[in-house]
Length: 218
DNA sequence: AACCAGGAGACAT
DNA sequence: ATGTCTCATGGT
View 1 (cartoon, rainbow, N blue to C red):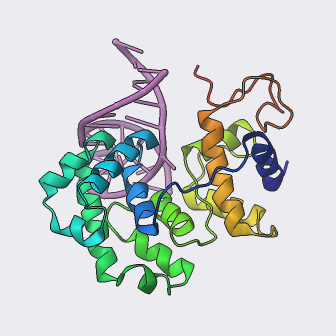
View 2: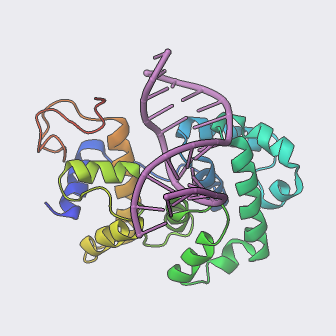
């Protein structure tokens, strides 16, 4: 089964996901940091806190105290770690001249620049590249590993870069890759949250098993 | 009441 | 290069 075929099945079953849920590229970046190992519903609460206090803004986040920021980030957990990471990111972001300035960089350079920021790892960097800077980068996360492991297409212990290039190569000839990568990653997350338990020929997991085994506890 | 959530860094081996 | 630990709230 090809990468694209699995995408088609996911799309047929779940429909368009309209990611990333945010009102601006900067909000995408903030959300990308806050959602590290954290459910999105908790991130929504923290972002609402930032909006309510009028600090969903690069300069405002830099200016405020660590203590106050950490308090607003309470719902996401790891609030001390994430307050530090957000501040590091914002300082870098402002220093680099903001969105338009960074957007002039080619994808590879922008990616290494992001990875050099404390608190931005491969997945967060790729979330930002794909959903904020609209670059053709395939995001790998734990769901992606588990799904394709259960599909028997990978071992599951491959390195991040290995998997990313595996997906990007597998989808290299597809048209509208930006939209494809955007939707594909969102669909994988959707499929993890809403596993299909019935026999469904359009479900990439059900197709191989009786009942959707993906994300089934024990 | 354990378990997981749209990970990353520090540190030891 | 490859494991293990920590960070921490909120929903199931």
